[in-house]
Length: 202
Length: 202
DNA sequence: ACCGTTCTAGGTCGATTGTCCTAATGAGTT
DNA sequence: AACTCATTAGGACAATCGACCTAGAACGGT
Image 1 (cartoon, protein in one colour):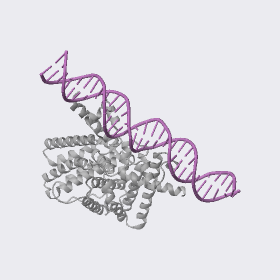
Image 2 (cartoon, each protein chain N blue to C red; image 1 turned 180 degrees about the vertical axis):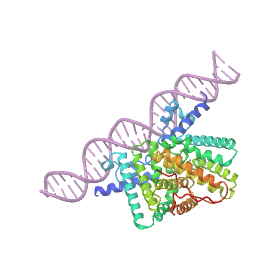
Image 3 (tube, rainbow over the protein chains, first blue to last red; image 1 turned 90 degrees about the vertical axis):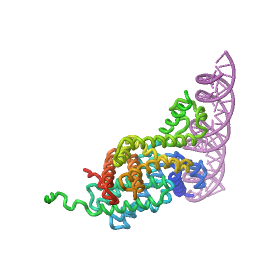
Image 4 (cartoon, chains in turn cyan, purple, orange, brown; image 1 turned 30 degrees about the vertical axis):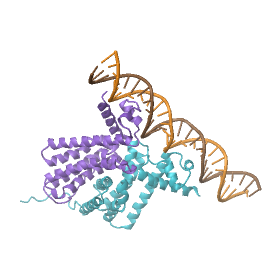
């Protein structure tokens, strides 16, 4: 088999297992069993576990990037694009209820392990953050676009965390409705007449 | 030394290490080093690691319970009590930025490990949930008290997750302001989820 | 001072971890 | 057919894991 193919299979298997079981709890033997490869053969493709983690994060970054690009192309309205992000909570609800958010849980684990790749994992958040911020700018909220982006990101993280703790499908749907309603209230450009002092009325 | 004292020291050391490094990443040797106890002596107090985890969760449940009781006694206004909970994000901000929320991250880890104690860990969430719900009832929101409680819980989880990923102190303060403003808008009566306007950025 | 219980120290066990090494296999080129 | 080089398999390594065991120290009641 070509090396690139094997390498990709390893990365994808590791990606899934790191998500479902956690980084530390996943051993090379586990991944090897999935890919049906000999344990030792691993070290031809990845010399250390950290190197594999790095490849997994790179893979996730690329996958996220392309997903955002698709959303960017598919919908013309920025508000709809933001909804695509929020809908992720429903699209992936089964996995989220079982394992939480892939990005948030990885960042948390790497933070506790004081792992070098902690910053790189947070870069995935940054992808969403800047994309969301870009959408809010497009709706005419350039003043607080980043704050709004962080707010949406935070909201989805909170929903994922509680959905996993309670394995509550209804809760996810309810909060997605809340986010959607909140977004709808944000759209209409806010300061139509910023610096006008209203005339005093009775 | 009395057994109860040693046992408590072990539990408290394990509590801290499970939080800072994670459950699986913490070995008996690590805890023994903190308590300055021989490794083997452990198994007199706790026969398995799961038994120790159970004791840690029990300890956290008790500590949380008593904290809630204190809040209940200290303030007469339910709205102020809820703010006590929200203020936890600021009181513990240093640890949260470093290790995330103790409850959320533990639940996440146990979920990935498919650990038996997963449900018991989620019980800590339940303590907050029911306490918060109780406060919302006291403000006259019995109809959707539980939903509001879950919303506050979710909000704090989201803030903790992103605060840990970005190690952003400003973000915590800004969102705590948002929660407080939202709470103030909730007190009077029903209108569902009004606008949350993040603080303007430069 | 004695004895029984409680508590502690330290060694040992098998299993598993990440990592390394070497021999064999594969395909492609000459 | 001989050679090259990328890829693979599988064993061996030290270290560490949770768990178990036993001998002895410390303690308290008699």
